[in-house]
Image (tube, rainbow, N blue to C red):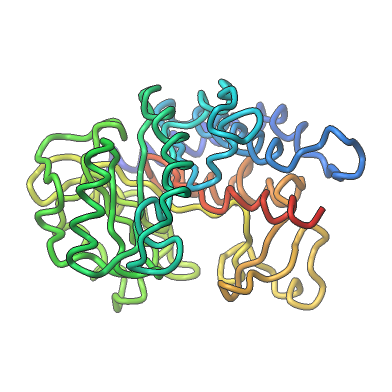
Length: 340
C-alpha cells in the first residue's frame, strides 16, 4: 500500500506539472476586470465563470471530481428568477447545489424559514433535482422536534439534508453511527448519498488524530470537512482515504470546504502585510465573521490563490485525494450588486 501511495503521489506531481504548463488557457481569462469598463459586466456572470473554470481545471486531474456550490441559487438562470432559463454551461459544471436554511434558520436558529422564502428556493431546487443533480440542505436547529421536522420535510422533497445544531459547524450529532436514512451501500456518486455531515470547525478536537477517529465512527454517506485541521496542518492523502470508509464498511465521499467569495486571514495564503497594506482585490471584513474578507473574485491574483498552480488551494485539495469541493460564499456577488 505504501508503494502504491508513493507512486500515486509521483504520478500526481507529474500530472500537475503537465497541466500547469498546458493550462495557460485558464489563466488567459484571469484578467483584472473592472465593472465600470462595460455595462455588460455582471457580478453574477463572473461568479459563474469562476465556478466553471474551477470545474474544468479540476476535471483534468479527476474526471469525476464533484463540484457543489452553496447558496447563490439565482446563478442558475439567466434572469436570476426561478422561472428564468437555466444556464446549461453552469449546470454542466456542477454536480448539485447546497442550500442553507431552507426550512429552519433564515430568521435564527430553530426559527422556521418564512414560507415565501422556502417556496422561492424550492422553485429553483426542484428544477435542479429534476435534472439529476444532488440537492444538499443544511437547516439550523437543535430542538429535537425541529430536527425531526427538518429531516422529514427534506425527505418529502427527496433532498439530502443535515440538521446542524451549531452555526460553527463543530458538532457531530450523537446519533452519527446511525444517521437519518442510514445506508450500508457504497456511495460512488453524490446523488447516491442518503445523508451527510457538515463539520468544518475542528475546535472541539484536541488533535487531528482524535477528529479522524471520531469521523471514522460515523455512518454518513458524505462528509463535508475542511481540508485543514489547523491553520497549516492539512489532512494527508492517506488520512482522507481512511475517512472514506463508514463504520458499517460501506464507502463514502469526502468533500472539502472551500470559500471562493471571501478570503480568510487564518489560511496559509494570507500575508501579514495585508493587515496594513491590503491588495486591491481585498474588500472589507465581514461584520458577521471575524477574519473573513470579501474579495473581488474576478481578479487574477485571487483566482490564482484558488487554483492553477502547485501552491493554490484547489490544487492542494486535489492532491490530498478529496472527492470534490463544497464551494462557499458563491453568493458574494450580492454584496457587490448592493454596492452599485
